[in-house]
Image (cartoon, rainbow, N blue to C red; front, side, top):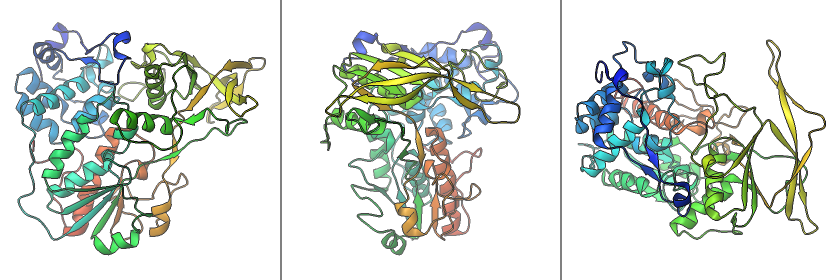
Length: 488
């Protein structure tokens, strides 16, 4: 695929970025796209490797060598058809996915891997620009109705696939607008929300109904939905935040990331928000948690005008190369530095927060940490231990807890009588996505726990196949690795 000698002729080239001083003045995306000729060269780097391990690295099973070759050939519309055959929303994954496909790229064994994610993003952007992505409602409708609860990537993927099968699909979303964490958790500087809206416009014209501001289990009971719909697909995500149960965690100024980020996204979108203004302007900010959510808090705090931003990570600092014991093509736990990290944050590794310190009025003014080490023994789980004599107090006006999620909310599950796993995820079979209640399915983070956007889309697609089979006795909707009927 690509040019036979392309991987020897062309080096990897990634998008450029607007200067830090310029981009932190607003919440716009700040990438500088490559020129078409440069993108063709990047597609040419895809090797005729025999066994494309990128397929196994991608939870969607994207046909990566095929669309890389189409880009190299300048056949962008063909690339669009190939990409959409396995991925409903490449404009989301092309911006937000950590690209496990690139870690599994054969070229990545001893060279820089093919820039798959960037090629994917440019394919879909070219398609929208040229009007190739248009509504394609089903040719005929079944008499079956499906309720999809949650409008994140899993819910949207399930809804679009089931609509393609001809079912009448209604998506319920408790927030003001559709998108879930795509809209309220991802900062606009990573993905502007018109990217969601243009896709929603296509989906609405295809016949999918969206009901926003409807909290299932509160505004409408699950019993009502069971009576109205032939099947229900639960895609509500893993939304229960992990707390930090240490002294002082109730001080004013200790804030959950998923309160901070959604509020800011509402501000950017002009949507009224409830509660106090969680601005980082003029504050000494410490972000606790070194993942993507922590990175998003860093970039947002810097744009607010924080005096300083420090990022704590309890794990040791990773290496730039693959660690021992994590060979290709597996996902390596290497050091990853985001664009937000490069905007002015100090990163501290192997550190644990012991307590928050407040003033006489209950306001956060600092926190106390200790250095930690992870001790390992053969056949046993690593044990976290504090390093004696390393306690340190830090000035802090705003502590943002970016510690991930522990599972899904249980209101709907309780009403339906669903079985849960120990992490309060809905216990639905990975073989058919069925719960213990007939006609009720679960997909995405609400089934598998906190995970990646690409996994959410994959789960939504897989669940749709099994819902269609439940309703009709069989399904033509594809499973992973099969590819969809070409649609753009």
